[in-house]
Length: 467
Image (cartoon, rainbow, N blue to C red; front, top):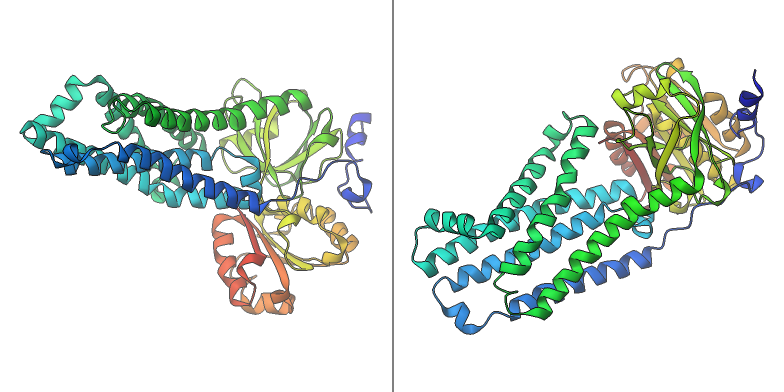
C-alpha cells in the first residue's frame, strides 16, 4: 500500500468510530429558510402583477374598440403572462441556493415540469390572437397576414424561431421521449431555451403593442430580463467557477467498490470551508478532453474529510462508465452542493432511511450526518450481495448511531419490500421521518407505501436518481 493510498484510508469511512461532525473537520451546510422562499414567491407574484399590469394599462379604449382590438389585447395578455412564466421557469432551474435548500432538485424539477406547459401554451395563443387581430385590422386573410408579419417584421421572424425552439423543447421534455434520450443530449437541447428567450427579447420590447411609446413599461420588462440573466449567469456559471478555483480539486484515486461501482477520491484546498450536508450532491465536471463539457450529478458517499472528498458511482451509461478510467491528477470542476435530502429536513426525533441500488451512496453520507439521537433504522435493497456497496461502512455507522440495519437482498419476487415487510421491520414507522433514495421507479413505489403506513407528507423526504 502506497503512502498516498494509506492517506485515503484515513477517510471517515469504514474504520472511523466517531461521526464526521464530532470531529468538526468541516462546515455543515446551512439550514433551509422556508420563510425566505415564501417571501420570494410573494415578490414573484407582485412582479407578475406589476409587469403585466403596467403593459396592459397602456392599452387605450380606442385601441381596444378598433378593428382587431380585442384579439390584439388577448394576444398581448397571453404573450406577457407566457413570457413572464418562461422567465420563472428559467429561475427555477438556476439553482438559487436559498430556494434549492428548501425545495431540493426534485421539488424544483416538479415545479419546473408542472409550469412548463403554461408558458408554451400561452405563447402559442399569443401568436394566434395577435395574427388574428392584425388580420382583422388590415382586413387580410389569416395566412396572408401571418406571411406579412413574418416577412416584413424581422423581429417577428426571430420571435417565431424562438417559439419554435420552445415548442421543440416542450416535445422533447415529454416523459416518453425524455427517457429515450441520453442525458447529455437532453441537456444540450434544453440550453436552447436561453437562446429562445434572448431571441424573443427584441420582439417583446420593440414591437409589443403594450410597449411602443411606453418607456416605463419597457424599462420594467428590461429589468426583469436583466435580473433573470444575472441570476442564471451568477449561480450557474459565476459561483461554480469561483468554487472550482478556490478548492482546486483533482482525482487522487479511483477505487473499485463492487460490480460496475467505483469510488473516486479527490483532494482539494480549503475543503473545511465547503458548506455541505450529508445526502447532498454536486454537479461534477471532469476536465479531460472527452468529458470537460459534461456536468453530471453524483452524491457524496461520505462527508468531506479535508483535504479529501469522495463520490461513489455506478456504471449506468457512457459518462458514469468512463469514470472508472480516470487518471490520478485529473482536474475537477464542481457546481453545488445541492439537495434538500439532508438532516435539516427531519421533523421527528427518529428516522428511517431506505435505499435502493446505488441510492446507498447518498444514504451513507446522510447517515453519517444524522445526530445519534435519531436511532436510525436503515433498510438497504440490493439485487445481490455484491451489489450492496459500502456495506461495512454503513454497518459501522448504524452501530455508532445506535440504530438497526435491515438488508433486503434478492430480486423483487424473492425479497419483497412491501407494506407487511416495512411494518415488521419498523413498527413505529409513523413516528419517524422517512428518507428514500434510489432509482425513480423505486422511489415512486415507496412514497405511497410509507404514506399508507401513517407517515405524514412533511416527514417523507426522497431523492430519485433520474434524468
